[in-house]
Length: 196
Image (cartoon, rainbow, N blue to C red; front, top):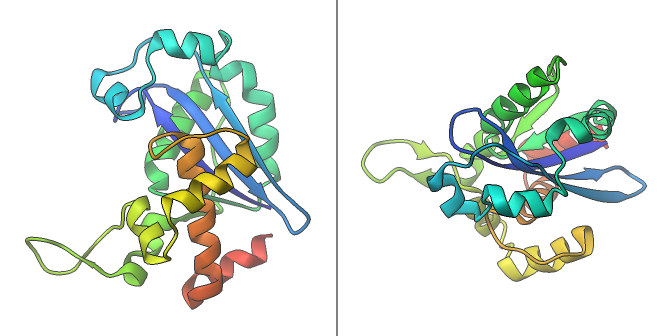
């Protein structure tokens, strides 16, 4: 089973996760989960991106913190043969911090970073220097001709809710679609299929 994930966080340095969404893809089915978490503080710059305040998260999370969903999250992660994220180092730094606060090790090694792995596929030129830049998730979707409306349609099917970029549900759906397009269209990504 492949697990595709995205997080919305309290800031850029490992603090707390506000929202965790993931899609679990096996040969038999595709299933999605979304969690909001009660947090202590959200940096204003992060709130401007994802529009999640402490007050809003109190309501969305039903007062539950990361630790309250830990058993379910650990079970799903342990059942994954591969974990996929866009800029996985960022997401994993926050997940590792959350696991650490729960006195659990976070040592998932079989991972795929769509941001780093698709650098030679997207071939996006840097503006002021030689070489290529890492694609944003939106640029990766554009490379595979995946529109926002297609992402929204699939997100509603997976999560039964509406959203846009910088909502973990939307970004996870975009990641899931882009990587699956890549498995079909790009030889270098086909190895992912063996993890289904």
